Structure formats: C-alpha cells, structure tokens
Amino acid sequence: MSLSMLPLIQRGGELVKSLNRSLVLSIPEVDSHNVVCYLGSQGEDDLDNVTFCKDLPAGKMPMVGTWYIHPDRHFAESLLVGLACLLVIRSIVPRLVFPADKDMVCLRPPKVLRFAMVTFSVLMLVYKSCGYSGKIFMIAMPCNMIQCLHAFLALYPKPLPPRATHVICQLLIVFAGLPVVAVATPDLSDLTLPFEIEYFFFSHACLILVPWYYVLSGKVSTFPNDNEETETLVGSFLKWTLLGFAVSSLFYFVVASPLGIMMGINLNYMLSPPPSPGDFIAGPNFRMYSLICIILLFTTFRGLITLVEGTLRKFGILQNNNNKNNPVVIEKDRESKSAKKNI
Picture 1 (cartoon, rainbow, N blue to C red):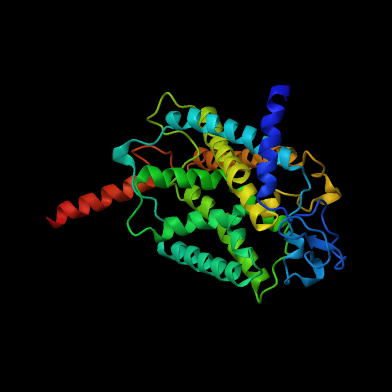
Picture 2 (picture 1 turned 180 degrees about the vertical axis):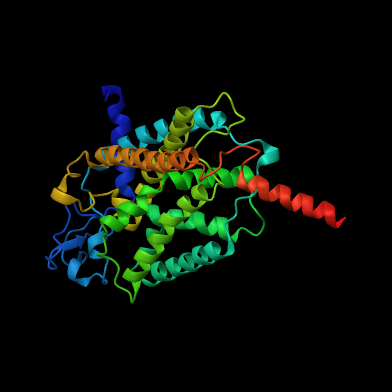
C-alpha cells in the first residue's frame, strides 16, 4: 500500500468505526456468558453501559459482530475489492452472449417448483423477522439471497424478459455450490425457533435442486449456443463464473459488510471468520482466504454441472442447445402449429 494512500485509509477506517462504536475487539467465547459482547453506544466500557453476552436473546451471541480486523483494513479491502469487482463486471457484461432473440422464451419455473420457492421464501421471512433483533438482516446471507432470486422468478407478476431470466438462471448455476457447502458444514447456532433447523435443510434442498432442474430440463445450458460461432465453452465458462464471483464479492464487501457493522452482527462472516475445520480460515487475512475458497467453489460446481451436461449431450440423453433440438423451442413450435390448426 502506497504511503500516499495511508491518510485516505485512516480517514476511511475512522468512518467505518463511526458506523458502530459498540463493537468489542475480540470474539467472545461461546461459553463465557459473563463477558462483554457490546460496549456502550459511544464505546463506553463501564458496567452501566455495556451489554453482557448472558443478556442477549437466544441465538444472537454466536452472531455478535466484533473488530476482529481493524476498521482501516475493512475500508481498504472494501475499496480495493469493490473497485476490482466493478472493473470485472464492466468488462464482462458487454461480452455476454445470449441465444438468439427469436429462440428465447421466458424460463419461469413450473408451478410445483414455484410453489416450493414461494413457501420457503415466506418461511424465511417469518423466521428472520421473529428472531433476535437484527436477525432480519440475515436475509443477506448467500443462500437467503439465492432464495430471494427464487422468489423473484416465482412471484414476478408478468414473465421476466427472457434475457433477464437467462442471467438469473446462469448466476444460480454459478452459485450452486453455496447451499451444498451450507448443508455439508451447517452453522445452526442461531436457529432457535420451532422447526427452524428442519426448515433450513428442506429449503437448502430446494436451492440445490433448482439449477440442476434448469440444466437437466434443457431450458438453460452451460454450453454456448450452437448458432454462436464466436463463443467458446471456455470463454462462456469463465465469463459467467467471474461475473457471479464479482457480483457476490461486490455485494458482500461493499454492502453487507458495512450493514453488519451497523447492526453489530457478523453478517456472512464478514466481521470474523466462520467456523471451519481446524480454523484454517482465520487471522487478519481471513476474508482474502475466503475469496479464494469462493472462486474455487464456483469454478468447481459450474465445472461439475458442465461436465454432467456435456456427458448427457454426448450420449443423446440431453439435446444440444440449438434451434432444432432445444426442448423449449420444440414446445414453442408445437404450440404455434397447434394454434394454426385451430385457425
């Protein structure tokens, strides 16, 4: 970091700290209820102004926000990551390749899937609004944000423009590994309401299912459109993967991190490290380590879905994504021919 940047970083750090001066410097021990979880509103540490962990509502203590990393570092990382993500998004979006307009139809989910999406979205709102103060903001957790995308697909009063739906579905494919990791290594520490743990697993099962539904039904492909000769499989793979990574990183470093500080909660583990085997994601660089893990996760799962789709296409189980064989276009042609017969 250039010395000329230090005054800017320090001023930015002071601005970040002013968002919430009640945060403590270290993570409270889970079993130590007699320790302080929050200072006074202006950082007072006298007993009349602090909040002890034992006085917090059920489920909130594991989510307590802290200054695990210095406010200056919060500002510097948010600034650098935010600018880098904006450059990536600005570079990729104009280069995205879509199927021809005449071949694109709205990819709204079927009724059964829409019902599941709406049901889990409503339950999410109920559980987040009925929990401890600030729990409503946990909607900004990655899997809950995916749930919001599901709700948007299911509840939009009119079918979305085909390109908008295509972008959402492609991003859902990129994010497909997030609910898998959440189920494989669940953090259930703040799920204290009746049947909230059961809801967690059932809703995540739906999150896992949706991107596979779109690909295996032939409605969305991880392969470039057969009519687009300038697009390669590697190019398409990299563009969608990097776009999903940039969008999610921009949101969590620039929006969710300051929001978590303001509310005093460790939103998406942006203020202190998540529970991990052997605490391998820890220390002042934990957010940078997390970025590496996320891009590897996105690459792995989009690669897995691409491999499965390619294998099914090779054996003729899944038709190629072109005008002649696209199941969506076939259905559209059938409807058109049926309408002409009726005339």
